Length: 149
Image (cartoon, rainbow, N blue to C red):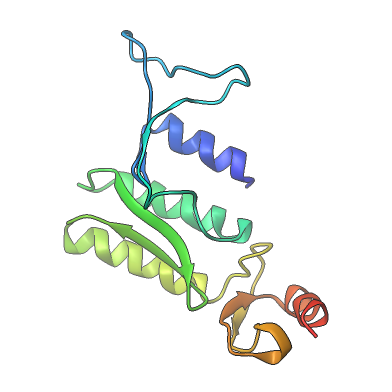
């Protein structure tokens, strides 16, 4: 799944993501800019984009599919990588919702955040072998190690 596909999915299900709300006309249709992209109605300084690799986009999609089937209010505060794992921050929610999120956060430690293939937590991905945590497959781990020698 590409970033564009995931973003379109988020628009299609009308999620409020990362404090980013899309401008709509009187009929409720998205207002687009000259390039065909939705116009942000407002954007908070603490918000931004999903701060993770494309390899986790399918995990995020699957997580959202499960959450939508619950009592979740569709409000997302932040989606990012932290210490090599997916973090999906929302407001208050039921235990069921938090259990689903936890399941996908755990799955992220087995999924390469670059390509989505099977991966493992690597604790030495910083420059010159420094401690920086990322979950990667063998191929992308070796490529990163070569790049950061």
